[in-house]
Length: 315
Image: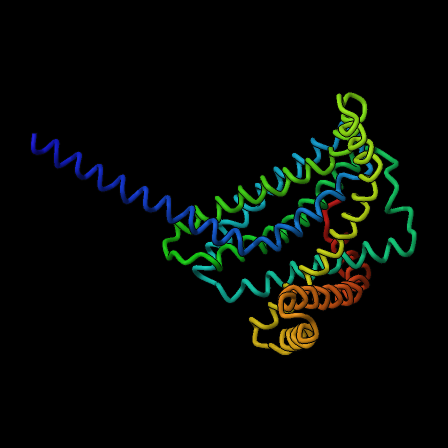
């Protein structure tokens, strides 16, 4: 009998430790996830533009394909890489993130350049719809990989537990929660016009039908604005990664200049708005830097990297 009681005591003690560990993981995940909120907003703004131009019946399947690729990016590729780099090669994280930031700057600047050149070749959705869908999904997953890398890196930096298994658990929880939140929001955004049409046709109340008509009327404008917000977010995040990465590598001048400008502008507003104004000035500086860096990268990609890639790619 005494042996059974001792066993039950041991089980109870193990259960308490496990419960404490679960609470610790959830607490760490909540804290770390809040630190990555900025990148989450960027991800949600960037993603809807990849669904534009397709038949309504294909919108949710496309969002699901991108979300599935995002899960794979975060949990299968980035999570183990983040843990390995953190344990054995933390020095390599800033340069790798800067490469990803440079790609975001390139993609954002290229989209702006094509928009002002009125290059119809990049806006048409003619041709094989399945091929176009596949290309769009691949492009979305590629962009998601860069944003996911930033999210996972920010999350890892905010984790204070030394145990690698708890770090992995926190990264997995944050990765899943953020992906569900981002692509759930994207699904709601891209199907809002269908919901509005349903409300306009079958709403029982006049206010419901009016609201539905308003959603249908203004949704194209909202999606257009969101597309440009997504492009701006690419440039902002890309520039921010570059500036922060240079600081981590020892060159603090760009960070100091941006910070100095933000503080200088913040001094001219009411104290209640100083933090908001400084944030907007910093984001604007990072975005402008990202745009000019992207414009410099475009000829390098088109004249050097792309021809080399085509030369070595299997036929």
